[in-house]
Length: 283
Image: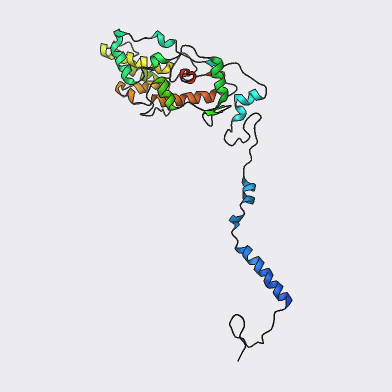
């Protein structure tokens, strides 16, 4: 009867013990085979070290600039290096609003303005803004996070602040414009909605024109004050085409977004002026 091997199979060859070299070869195979089946995910550290992006810190600023990528152009970086700029010139139209008051003789216009939700802007604007204080706020503003970076942490202006300070709508239809108006389109809009022609208009039409003109003046002096200091973008007039819809817009959200944008621009070292509704920032 042929002998049985350890695996249970029979063989006609005589059974013999493996030599020392054969035993060493089997041990080496046992040590190498598991390494071939090993999941390479067990050692991800080497791959991460080779592909990870390295950010260098900024003098006097963030150690890791993966978030504040534009810090090199920030006014705070220039101040750390010994450069400085004078307090910003402010665009504040609080005094101009007092030049166009709505008395009882213009009651119909006042009623329309009151229904629009923008009436509080006629009385809450500061006549004077503090240049040193608002300039210091700009030095602390970071565009990437839309917050003020202060010694005790981060702070920002919220929609709740807008509603509490300005008392204007913060929810509703969003205000946005796809592109600036061409000069011809702007002129046509002025003629259509403000009646800037020599044609004599009816009394009722004059009331509509005057109401739109006042609302355009109001938002140009407050929510969307720009650096021109004497003009307002005609594109906002489109929002007053239907006066019954004016109160449905989220004016507070648009004002806050516009102020964020103006603060971000003012953080650049070469900028010398600050726009936006400064009453909201100073209050």
